Amino acid sequence: MTEFYEGVLRQGLQPFILAVLANVAALRSPTSLWKGAQKIMRRAVLLLATMALAILLAGGVAQAIINGEPDRGPNAHPYVGAYVATVEGGKLRPVCSGTLISPKVFLTAGHCTEFDIEKNLPVYVSFDPTYKPGASQLIKATPYLHPKARIVEPSTRDSRYDVGVAVLEEPVRMATYGTLPHAGLVETLKEGKRLTTVGYGTTGYEIDGGPPPRPQLVPSGDRYSAAVRLLNTRDPAVSDQFVKTTGVSLIRGKGEASCSGDSGGPLFVGDQQTIVGVFSIISSPVVCRGPAYYQRMDLPGVLKWVRSFP
Image 1 (cartoon, rainbow, N blue to C red):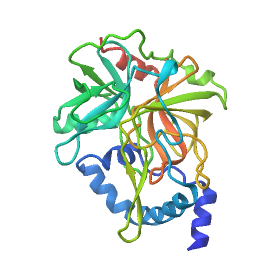
Image 2: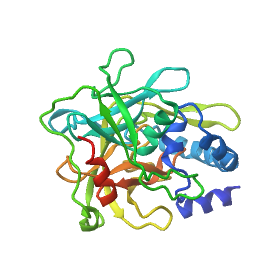
Image 3: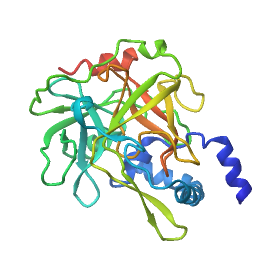
Image 4: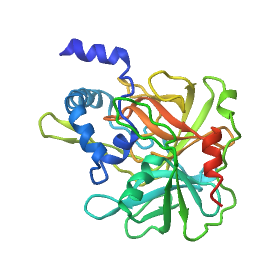
């Protein structure tokens, strides 16, 4: 078994699960997709969970965004908010993140809005730096999903147009908003370029003692930011619509990355306003390790649809 783990570690745990499962399913009532994926992934998840526990014990507890910093002060991103929706048990909780790009248009990931549209559930957005249940201001919104969205089973890793929008019922006036990129911007970025990711994701892990012991992601509710670097825009393991960035190293736990609850959160270029992608896929969702993948916002088919909302 040790040889198996070493082999998996050397391969870097190629992305095998979409963020629709990694970042949302644990918080939401199970969907038909999740039920089907459970059958396929049960053995792999148990093996990875055991390995993940060993990694956690060696590397310590991570912080949200993993190894990031609280998004406060003059360099904060107040236009990044929490996508708040109904979770199992009827409670409201931040399940995703996103960016306000105009007084009423909140940009997020398609796998975040898909569930609420399907189940006709109410959704809300909060811009409080720390989301407090029952206390934070909530703005009701209507969710939308890109008409060409294809959020597929994890074994195929070929999700496309993972883009969603929540239109606020009441406008929110800010000094600045997030902005969409010009078409093809990602193609002009050099590998190694510093980028910023922001979101309301997990704070770390708790250990579930059931056999075998499993690390459980703990939702945060705090807005964090982190610095990552562009790796490439072409990865044969995933759809060509994604941009790949650095993440937390698998063994030592160094580096920064988005995690559970950061889905839909922005990937900013240096100006801290232009959104080149929204968080969609993590390589190793059990412990949020390895490279991260963001749905590109600079694609003409994405830009045209998002700009259709006033």
